[in-house]
Amino acid sequence: MKMRGSETVKEDFKTQIFDIFGTVDLEQLRAIAQKVQLIESEKPHNERGAGRKNSLTPQQLAEMLALHQQGMGATELAKKYGISRQTIYKQLERAQNFSNDPNTMLRLNYMNRNDLCTTIDVDFKHEKIKIKNYTDKIPLRAFGMVENPTWEDFQWFLKAFLRHGRI
Image 1 (cartoon, rainbow, N blue to C red):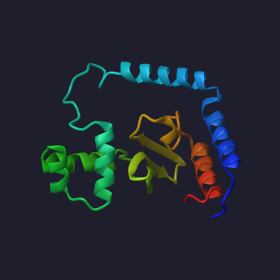
Image 2: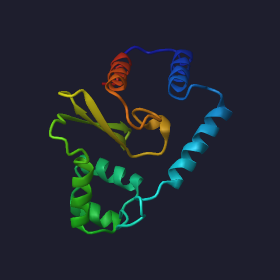
Image 3: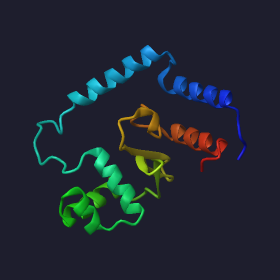
Image 4: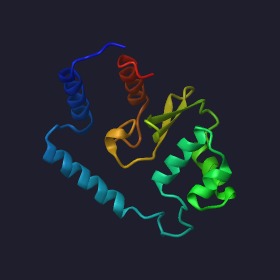
C-alpha cells in the first residue's frame, strides 16, 4: 500500500465530502446535519405508531452484530444486553435477513473498526442493492446520505475502495 502525504489525503477527503454533500463549507454541512436529524426525529415507528418497539437501539444492534461476528455467543450477548437468548436469536435473524429477496447473492458488512456501519445486500442478477445503515454518523455510512443507492452508486463504491486498497 502506498503512503500518501497528509495534504493528498485531506484533499481526497474534501473531494468525497463535496461529492456527497455538494459543499465543504462547515456551516452548510452543520445545517444539512440538523435537517437530517429533524427529519429522522419526525419519522414514526410505523404509520400508526403501533406495535412492539425494538428491544435494542440501532447502535446496540450494530454492536451486537459485530460482537457476534467476532465469536461472542447468544448467552453472552443476552447477559450483556439484559435480554433473552430468544430475543438475541430473533434480532440476529432479522438483521441477517432483512432482505428476503432470494436473488441476493452477497452480503457486505461495512465496518469502522469493530463497529458495523452499513450492511449491503447485492443482487447481481437484477443489478440491485439494498442497504441498512446502523449509524447516524453520515461520514461512516457506506453511501453517506444516500438511503437507496443505485447499481451505479455501488459500482462507484467498489471502485473507490479498490483504488484506495481497502478491499
